[in-house]
Image (tube, rainbow, N blue to C red; front, side, top):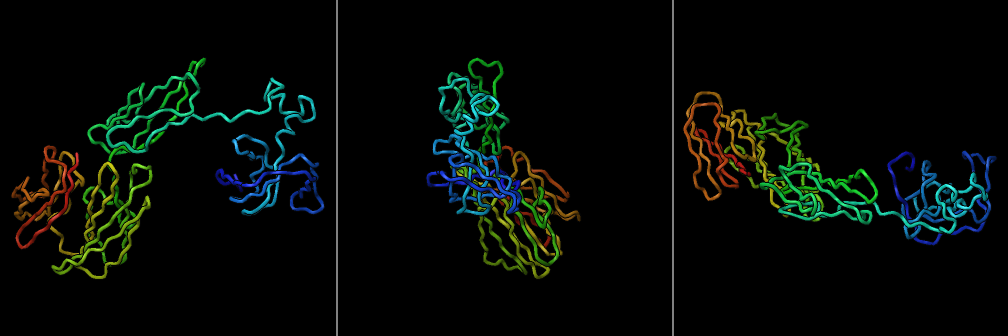
Length: 385
């Protein structure tokens, strides 16, 4: 824990050695020194990482992962620098008494000269499930039995004995797997967990520091604005998915050429300037992995003439879509088209809100069109079950 920071690992690529006495300065005071005898320390040249106060006592590991020393001191700074670690084999024998040697406390067999590192059990398997995958425990003690459970059976089930995990109803989201390991001769199992992603990724949206919930539509004043995309999900390799943003400007009846952006960050801030009243910006956001694609839409406008659709949500929709209209009593026609331009819903209404039942509609990207007297508005709506 260098300088109190989180655990860090420094490496060296040459043999450690020491045959000379080492003089340690104490508290940066040249009048206070301590000399360690020759052949009591391993001196290593760190070639990656560094050495800071607070690291003392950290283990020195050999090429086999065995502890061969404990950090005593060295030259503070970034690599390349030098470290001195007390030799574990010297401490093992110590002064020959139980009070001065490690062997008396760590082994009751005087013939033991080394102990290999223990395997730490880990759940092995992919971080993404599109349909099904099998999980296992690597490093479990010989003869152990493993029982599997899923943290969310509505998204993912797992066979308790075989570790076969299966996606449920094309669900998407994060699920934690738990392996309960019962080792021979023990009464209570130990548990380890692994959090994986199931299905397609998705994203949450925000504007200027607040959440764009449900309708993804916002009226703003001219100025500098920031659309934020919070991306969730994994690819087949475990890396985070890309975010692609398509921004289209419309003003005075003219639709301008779209601008495209992409990012690999978990949180994407897209900042742009709106100069005039009457400008509207349409955003199309997509993020994909090997299981599928999430697509979302947002509208940001300085048009003071409020559009007929106040909100259409949730988007993506599952069993129903709520469409809120401007509350002025005007008769409007609401039509929903699928990607083949087939009408799947049509109604005339003066109501300020209608609900479209979508549970029997296929997964697709739809066009919602609302027309009234001298006004028309279209929105993209995704239906996903």
